[in-house]
Length: 141
Image (cartoon, rainbow, N blue to C red; front, side):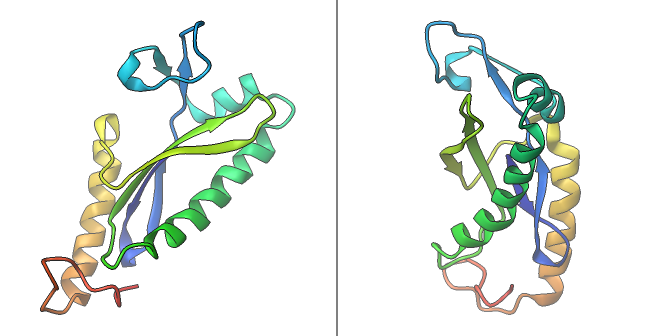
């Protein structure tokens, strides 16, 4: 799940892109192991979770809305992007494996750049100096 700040400094969900494990010897894998392919999120959920894909999709949206705000509270400076590595069990339970504060953009470069430009334009108008250690003050919510 790729999340970045956009217009008005608000968090935006850029894309959720599922990776499907092709490694029959392991239930859990990652991109570093090279055993993955990517697909479209709606197609993935409908194919692998036909009975519960709508519930899972709703849970993913809730996770986006809640997680980004709560995770930001752990840091004294503003984060501008998050990458969540998630897993979904056969029963449909969502698990967070890893959180990246500087996620790669790859094939999402255009929508990420558009959101970032809106965020930086907002910052240019709303940020006040001095910034402590080159980090933006937290009062920009």
